[in-house]
Image (cartoon, rainbow, N blue to C red; front, side, top):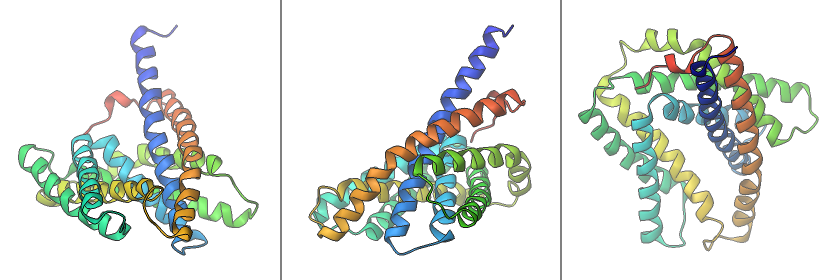
Length: 257
């Protein structure tokens, strides 16, 4: 019979992995659709979206203070840009401004805490996990050309990235933690998160801004696919988290920066 502590650990794991999976799934599908609109095809949008979403989710999962500072910087930069520029929206400028503010916010976190280079090490682990999972998914989609829904794609990529991250996190972080520069780790991670959040704000603002019809339709198409990615990631994260917990990968033993 399971003890109260064990049940609590399983429920907590289910909750955390579900939220992380939902975040990843929504980001992945949104980025995947945006990259297709921007002209990327074949394996490119799959791999780039998987890497970007994995890095962002890894930052939130393992370096919450830095990721929150980056997210707040992205929101503030986006709102400030929208106030100043009005309807003249440019996703590249929003992302650049957000990243710049994220560098400042991350620098403040690095100055006030002792996180060292761990946030960047965790984000690099997410990069490698996303790259591996993205390549696997791209190969599967190439071998089986029948269209795959975004719900299934999100659930599958979340399971792959989550497993790769959890299985390889310890040795990757241990291998790179010593030589990564402490002073720029938090600013780089915060800038990356801020840029992703800024681009996401652009997608939301684009539905009501004075965009041309073609761009507005493209943004609407992206937003219509995000809920399926969110739900697919939620399911994939929940199942993966429980399986890893039962296999002995304890959430309570996970170190954060």
